[in-house]
Picture (cartoon, rainbow over the protein chains, first blue to last red):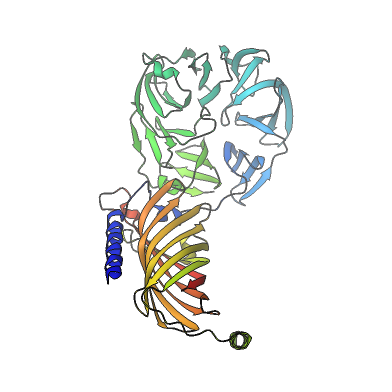
Length: 340
Length: 203
């Protein structure tokens, strides 16, 4: 009898515990809803979009290298190339640099998007390229920590030169005329902002808050009509203001990445910066540095899909290269998203 | 199909006869207060349905592979003690996993388990209900939910203390959000159908 009573008491305690913890939402985000919206993985791996031409897409993929994608047939075709490390484009050609040994120059090639012809270019010490823009960050010499940004299509077009860093910096571009080179120089980071116009702006981003120098910039948006800039650092902190006078705003929660200094995938639309946070929720950053969650239905398509890159199209069309689920088309005007 | 069923019935009958001939028949077990059972289970799990009551009609119900989950797997260990000659109570700790189109969903249920065995002997029919909670994981999300189950089985005790059971049933996992929660529309009742083989030791 005592044993039965003891057992009943244990059951009651267990049931009470069940009631207490019922629906305990640890860090949920609609698990079953996200499962019901999951998409097939695509065998090419993570996709860095480069360009689109004649309804075809060109991308650098982690599993299959340089590829061309036809959304009509849903077929991926390899572009003849080996060990591609960096890519850029001027809209007519695709430029790529292959892997090189330490202290060796990279081989650079131009792939004509119309004729599919491949032309070798002069070798360069390539540090980075901007995949959707005509920009290439190069080291001036193997034995000097001096860097320049030149056009991938025309090496003679030097956009900024004589940049000094103690380690290879990163190139973050809004377009082929607007970019930031962010790198460490001694104990702190410096961020060179360049806007190529009739009068080129070429300044280090500055702030009275020295925290700006603690982390690299990984995404930004610049409005040249108002001279206002918002920048996201790798710790998620948002900086706003003019390039010469930035102040800290709020922050976004970014996922852990390796390395954390890589440019973060983001796109620009109507003077705002859009990116996906660590919960795969879309966030929009205003020119004033405020952050809000995107409530549009296009964002709900990506709750279980990680985005690896963006390519901005025309008329509010944004293309997203994902980590495992192919290429998606986002219509910002129609507020829809679909897999291509 | 008829031939397959006849062949199956024949095999079951023959194996029963052979077992009877190889050793002395297992004595009919009399359960009583204090009798114990240890059970190890494993088997596939079918996604049965997702019911989303807060969505518009037409989008509320997804069944089987429309849920975008593939067939998964379930394994568990269970311990029960008998309260009387037919009713046993205990607990079960399990692990369930299934892939959707690209990612892995897992849940670890811990439940109190009540089993009623109306038909006893060399062959038994255990009927069980369970209630507890489960830790659910998917990508970077996690959720602690209620967990409920109901199942029926068919057991064959080939020895006095050892038996195997083929069972099937339902598992229910509710994911609940309040009306003022951003995830209100994501409220879902998920149902699954486990089909398991169990090995039981009793004394």
